[in-house]
Length: 76
Image 1 (spheres, one colour):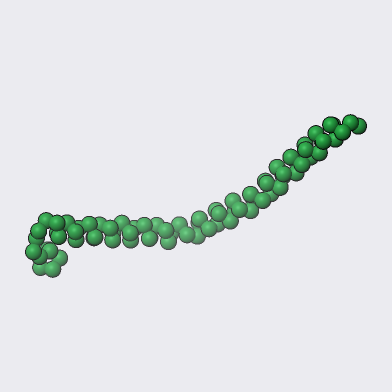
Image 2 (cartoon, rainbow, N blue to C red):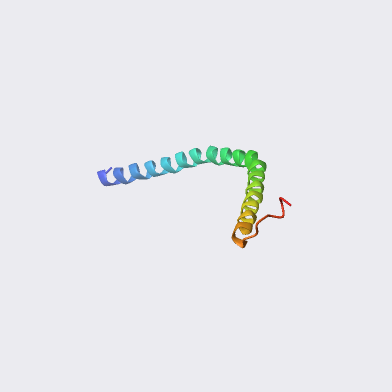
């Protein structure tokens, strides 16, 4: 067998091995990612809702400062 054919076969075997190793290493990561995403979804939704409400409250408080009102309706 010629050396060129041996080199080509060696690279082909190496390529097949790398494809198989890549597939086997990615599959557990996908499962872990799916599991983590499922556990954290409810908490992330609650945090997003809280963040939205806090931003609304801050924007409204700045609106009273900018408008020049001496007393906000919340205090009265």
